[in-house]
Image 1 (cartoon, rainbow, N blue to C red):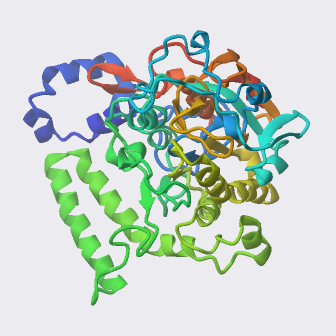
Image 2: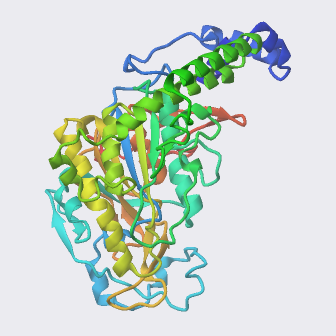
Image 3: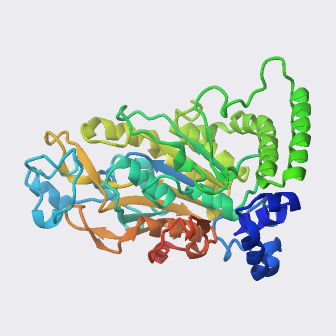
Length: 492
């Protein structure tokens, strides 16, 4: 709606009559909608006055979180080896998964031809932690230390069974490409808190587990049918953090400034003649790019970090591209009022060799994830920063390929998986949901991925049912058209 208002108010008489598709229908619609269609402002009483952009009606209610960090484990970490302790499976090693448990579930082509589905208990030890008594694997010793800071959700589920549609689904609300990502919705709805950095920033850290990792695509942080200014800006692991951030040889900052000023004047003339709002967006994007030439290098400079902070994040904290480095960067971005930061850590697709690959992946993220939470707490920022950790689906209790007590593999499993959340709006030290003895089906408090996204939006002051945009004649939402709700049991 807001984009329509901006578009309508920006139209010149010449552009209006030149756009036959708009015609008298647009004029009629404007007359029906009254002042609101003509750009009238209706400011939310909860809106931050310092923000840039966003819908005037948002947030819908007082937010508990002003910003968010999403630590996305791309490839699907094994819930049964991390958070979903199933001790009874130890007695059923190499026995077939009962058909009554699988109940005709469709399988991937990687295991559908197997003659057997032998049960593979986790080879890793578990212990209870925190006041909630949540079970956490020995693979995550640092995460275990913050059991009272996080809410573990064990009962997530999704319909998607393969990586590409599954990760697209959880990030954009639809298994098919073309929809706006979570971060883009937040940028569109809530606007930016910083005029010198993008509202939505993305990093793709290195990993040490399985090297044949699933590809990820920029549509996961894309704007879909929303204006492109709402898409995420991805930082590269080497060279300029953002392409073309540095001026070409022989071009000084002063020359670059004069070039942009001249280009802005030309674009402004085009806008006055044509009235296309996309021209104004282009002017703003050039200006943001110029600001980023100074703001991004400053952001990446770690010399101001204390030794104790760097040590807290671990030995990789000063190695660009590592998960630890990116987690520290996420805190620095949030500190500079970037609205939403998303890390995509690949390599979690353990179809085999869990004994070696999964511990490596866990070491990549465990200490840094813990350090991020502690760092935010120490700076009194966790109370209004939401942090989410998780992947796109889970892993099977049965083995893919050869099974031994020392090693095994697991296929994709959409029926249940685990994540954790912490910070603004989340009740700390709780475990929500339960699964059966095979970590196969949800038995208590199911949470659909749309419910999870509704929960994230709720923490940021958004009623997910009221955040929508027109596309192909429909009011499209991140959380779809079916009835979904924030998970109130984990809300503070």
